[in-house]
Length: 250
Ligand code: DER
Image (cartoon, rainbow, N blue to C red; front, side):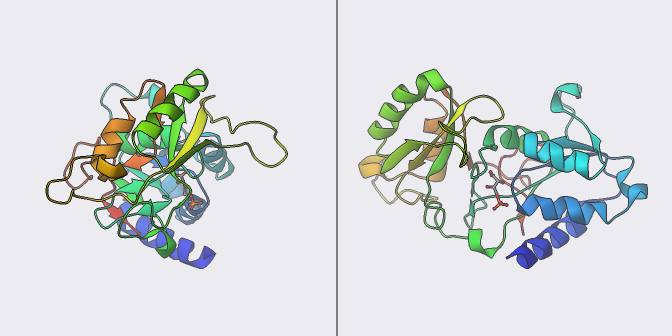
């Protein structure tokens, strides 16, 4: 698996990291470690003038350990887009919709991905599926303000979730997983998500949703800070940045 992650990372960097780029977003998880490794091998002549933007504590540590210049979205001038962002995913459907958040970094990952003109997803073949929720069975990660957890769990039930639970902390850490933003993660399992509704069906009817339909509904729930469905327009459709879906997946 590590070899397939490396090969995917190598192809993604080769095809999408121009030496002229100056602002690079770096995602979270284990696959993106290979992306940073491949970029490091380009040498400081290429990477020296570049600034790298993290998507959480692990990503920040990766950037620093590689000796890259660290930057933060909050330092950018309004509307200044990153050149490219590389990040992993937990599941990818044929329309390049993603489930992300297996590493509980989805909120900053979505901010950095949508700040980039080009978002490139690096996900080995295990992540590919026809319908989100068929390969990744742990549920859609939803980042929630702690005080809102009971209300959010109640609303998810009304939306037809099959199960939902607050993610627990790492082994050796009692209590709930606390994200880099100090919030909680609720993992909500729904029926596999469609890319279009069957004739005559409404969104959410009998718990059946499209990716876009459920994504738009989840973000409306009071107390939800962000969720791990990356959907809508892809970078190919939104040249100026702001797309949640990648331009390509490797
Ligand atoms: O949390 C995330 O979305 C990560 O990108 C992630 O889940 C992918 O992790 P992996 O590269 O370790 O599979």
